[in-house]
Image (cartoon, rainbow, N blue to C red; front, side):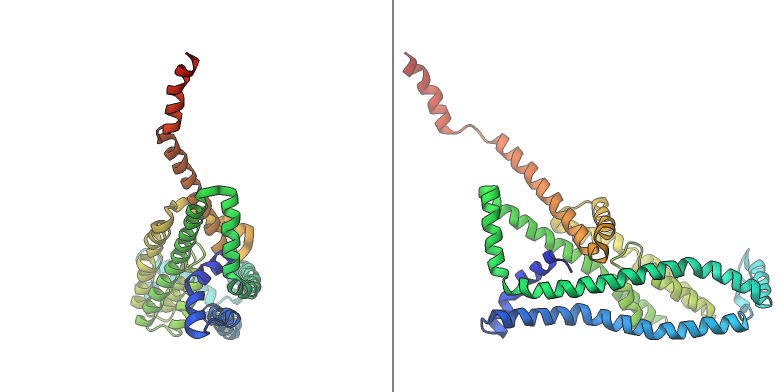
Length: 337
């Protein structure tokens, strides 16, 4: 979580916590807000990482067993598939009776995913470290928020003059829109995915929904969850449930991102979808995992300030000449005479 999002949280909740809970003790209020951030953000991520680590051992054991015994015989529904069913079943049976060939084919499939998993794990670990450091810094932002806000306003007024308050208001509204857009879309996708997995009877539906929520911050992230789930259902001979999960994920989980994110982002920021995508990708490339929040925020703020600057220039050009200028022009000839 970036400093701008931390300041947004402080603006929304610091005064309420300070007055209602802690009776004006700023340090206690800042500590309470920091603990709330840890409970809401860090605790679910830690639980998700622990559960995934526990399931990795089961996955490794299953892969080892398949490598030792070879794949099972193809289910009946594979042969019944139109057009490619017969050829696919024959190819499957050939791999089932030829362990070396199966191992070679499996390595071809797993190799790219292993590289992606390694890179993803590295980014996830670095992101957790950045998140922990951000929360530590956030405590001091919560503690000295009012003083920092006053100082920011003074500096802005020195730089921008009378327009400073308007510009700060634009920045605040923009940050709020980005926060609601990113987190709101991720929550919607995670909730829809979890409901779909629960309807299909998939085990650990809540965990998979949380994983979808995390991957929703990455472009095209949710298919990496519901896609393997649908494939697993096919392997379990639950063909119709696999089709249901695939359709549910394609039409609802992944498609809602195309409508909800631009709506939530553009409602307060008027940020074009393409610029939002550039901010997301550029933020990840420049800042790592924390760039998922920081990139769109910086780009949205820059876009809003640019629009505000253009509007101010047009407004100044449309203003009529002042009355003093008119009096000076009228008095000029009389003085000359």
